[in-house]
Length: 459
Image 1: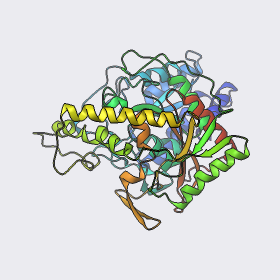
Image 2: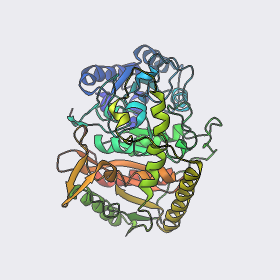
Image 3: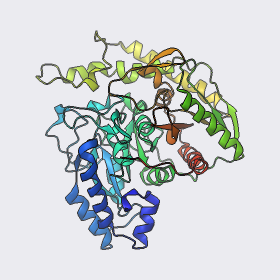
Image 4: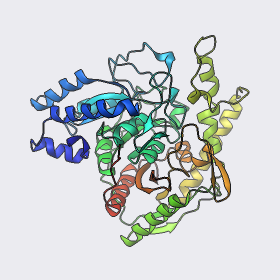
């Protein structure tokens, strides 16, 4: 069953002729045919094009660091000749003329793009559902959410329909699905992986928050994808020619941030975060408790940019149209639409920058942080409140460990590290300072080595 291997093992099997690129592709396509009718992770597959690529690899006409590896791409990123629907019926009929930056990089690396994966309408939800493809189920429990907005990507990877792929993250949209589905995902610094060809565009101001990044079943594969994708593109206003380093955590102090101030997390999640700290200390890593000062308002400032500032523009898309927006788009709209003045926007930018500088000062001696990804594991569709330690928290509260790092442009990864009371996987979030993705990945790999093999998805 070569489709169940890691990317590293797939590369080894292809190199030693244990299986061919076509055989590896066929195994993935068979898995998709078997599992996706239940999951609805795929918007579409690209079988003919994928077959041509796999044959080119087998015939020695195509090579590269991902030669023959089947991958997927979230349906918010252009793939030439394919629609980019971003979960919206308003985009039916669209065909991309050119590849997104990441699609072009995957092709150049020899990867076999097998399909595009599902997302909520215009990526505005922590669940994956829309009028076109429907709801994506969680491979660990189809009744539960796969997360959003990269839920289709996470479900495809967790269920062995894809070896890895590309998602995007403006408020946890890579990390929440990774946490829900028991896989690994990286939200890089804005511009580290150019987001050219993403819908909606990752330009100012949204590009301060939203990035594209790799997703895979383990951190080593995440690193392989990151090294392929990181680069410079002058069409991305955030992109810089930043070289990729080797990654080293020796001598670094890791901060353990158990919860966001008074927002409780489930006992199993808190225990997992503490255990990660203990595991690192036993491995000789310097670990200390980390409780940052002055960050209480960071999620609200994120919400201003991600939700409040974008809402008027999204509403206007539907003005005068017969179609209705999907609930995943409407859920976070205010009852009364509001327009903001230029002064209010400038003030929020200033608040954002001051908070960012404050956290950077506090991370000078603690450059790496470990925290929960969310307060809760995968939940039922449209479930929005939970009782934890006698306190009711809402969805917005449960994401407060993730959203500040979108606001500040800090890289963050999630890896699976345990299980919650409901039997669902629990992700550990690892945060670093801007442009230090390699240190995050090095720490993620170390933690996975300490953790040992993670149980495969049972679907």
